[in-house]
Image 1 (cartoon, one colour):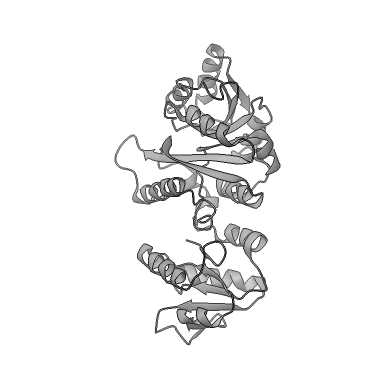
Image 2 (cartoon, rainbow, N blue to C red):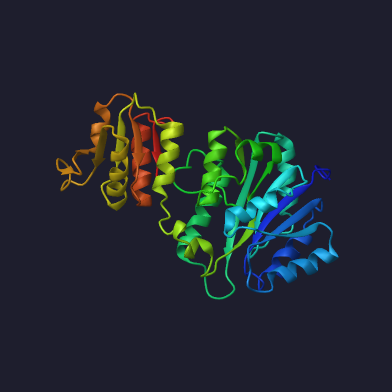
Length: 338
């Protein structure tokens, strides 16, 4: 089998997921690609999670259990990563499951490109009872479209473009971008920006490669770090580091809540902002000391950089079409921030 000599190291943080662990680990054991190791790290669980992992480890030498000396997700992942012996790196969540050919598909595709490339696949949410929430379905559909169209960096300021569990990367590349070292949440989104920063190639696969459990007590629902899922602070930090050219005018498009919140954040960077919208009631008014202009203002600006914070999908589509009519290019001239 292609790439069979490459060991995949799977890092998995575990905290109070005993009820889900057997399904999770069984899905790894059942992989068609068998050259892997599972580095499961217990993050101070209060249930039987450690015992369950230990029982599996006793039966399969590829499964190893460790215990985090510090609580929370990133320090726990760091403990697991320190034990890696494989060439390729993957992350797993202890309440999710893998399709049977996940690792085989990722490795086979990675071998085509080699170092310098991340392979990213699609994902599907599921629940034990009831229905998956609408927000998760929309996010899932968008993620899968990003993977299908291979537009990860083009859409990176919208949301986290690569699910934390649905990628594979060579250890040398992972080390180069900092691996799990920065204590920054959301950790998966920060990692995507570091892939972008270091110019790694992302290749999307139009295939579901991870089964993502939706439950009420996921940390993405309960931790304060994930409460405002717009992550404007994180996005702006990287935008100014990687894409902002202060020799070009900066345009903010959108006068709703997102626009107002973003405008206040932009004021911290002490530069002139051209704020635009299509709301006749707001055009010509000063908000936070910034004059609101009609979006046609863009035509009068020389080579502007445009941040779009309009939330409506139809509105985004219309804006994209208009910008293309004006010969504006994504990544070079404009970015969607929602």
